[in-house]
Image (cartoon, rainbow, N blue to C red; front, side):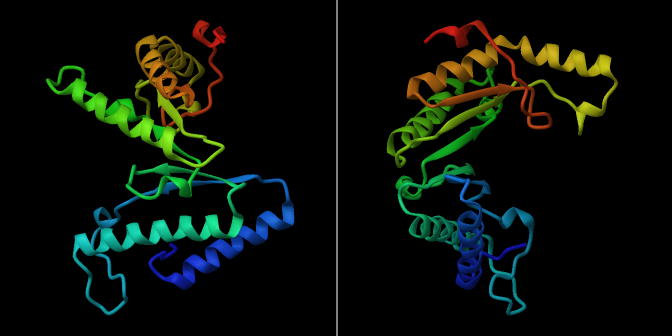
Length: 212
């Protein structure tokens, strides 16, 4: 586990990225997954290794500052022509540090029967539009939405008939597919739709995709 609250760790981490990219010369960007703004949910954390865990507020604030530092250092090393894309929490850092954010399965949070579902959607939309509008060029913000069909771990190991049933159910969930697509188009972001976070990457094609 990398402790990004240590500046020396961040420096080493970015140096490794730069070294690998410069040796291959085939990458024009980097994808940071799990860019979280809190880690206190992991339990007691002793940031400074003094034997006493810090309280949750201190841990989360220190970690969020550390994640900002990772992005700042990465941008400083690579410059403005390098694409930095992140997936994680929608924090209030300088959006010019990144080119885009992945909004992964965000509509799973909506409860259609909840009286405030409209305001919940409006909040998600506003956050999405902010990242589409304010991030650095070229912009890469993406809505990655699963079908909301539930499955166990590694569903591709199920018997073929069960796999087929899951995939059929996922493909035919037009309601959630169109909700994600329509929202993505409101901000001219990218869009991907597949089964769920347990089984990504289905190349499903819909009539709506034919429209230019």
